[in-house]
Length: 284
Image 1 (cartoon, rainbow, N blue to C red):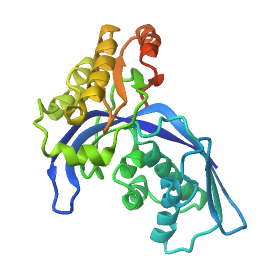
Image 2 (image 1 turned 45 degrees about the horizontal axis):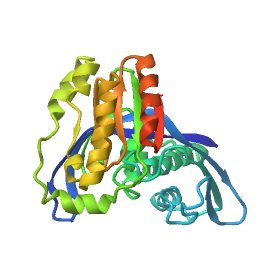
Image 3 (image 1 turned 135 degrees about the horizontal axis):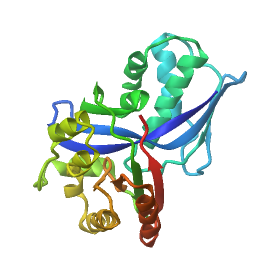
């Protein structure tokens, strides 16, 4: 079976505080986009769980979230692991704040639900995804959603009006654990207007969503990385983006456009920053 694993963006991201279990309470609005990895799954008669990707540096064993998802699936079903081959064509940038690994895991769970004719609801599949990672439940469901708790408590929202998204993942990565460790001691400049974004979604107001986007992790970035992300965001605005922000723990910055020609011009302009650049549409 072949299945797509859609990337996600954070239209808003707020960290509410550290929990007793060491995690952080989050409040964020997530959005699927058409940028996707392609996964192919097939059973084998060796009894082995094997993963291969087009990127040599990614793990091809149980450290890969796609493999973990398969194991958690069998565990939740009370079944023994079987021989399974998972081939992943990575298109979503790695360590970019777009849930590439979590989306791959979610795609495996959705595929296995169909391959084994289990008939589980998306919500039941998402519950298994909680055993793999905090972003996996959202990646199972997709669309536009409010995510709370560690990210696993989901509330469906009215869809973001279809638009173009221009993304730039700079030529450096950000340590997610380091940012989470730092966020508690950082003085945040402001917090996202999450309720305002929800109201704009309910009104079908793309511009209202775009101008309210914000991600508190931007305040926790090291100075040089924060400056680069700000440069990308400013360039996107200059090119006609309705709004710009950073996704997840970064460093990918993105802008929303209601005009395809302006979006394509922005994509060309961003080549001066290097890195990986995409122009895609949102996905319902």
